[in-house]
Length: 121
Image (cartoon, rainbow, N blue to C red; front, side, top):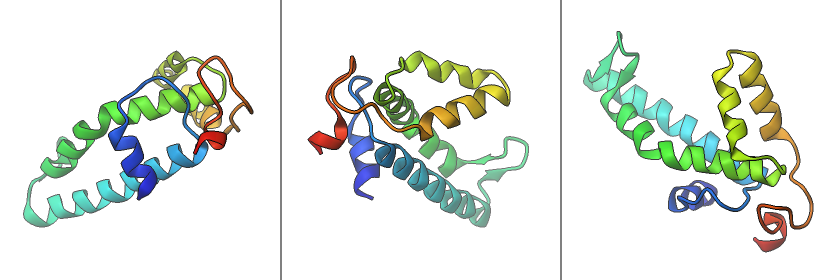
């Protein structure tokens, strides 16, 4: 939960994010979205045509900027520009490519995007 809250409080696209920070944020988003989807279906606010509920939609919109920001910072940790996130728009191949980039270890020491987050946290 600590890593999720750290990302929620950080709107910055500058700096670097560890794998741990990125993946714990991703895990909590999936878990929270699952339970909000369940809540939406129980109380009847889930739309089959939109495949989204009111609470789930509000949650996703609420964390959209933080999700993009942590993705950019994660790419910075690997020494890549945040613009690499746009590769996600290439179906299948782009998704796999970005997934692989998110799994890569970060550069040790300071790089062009800042100090090593493993040494500062």
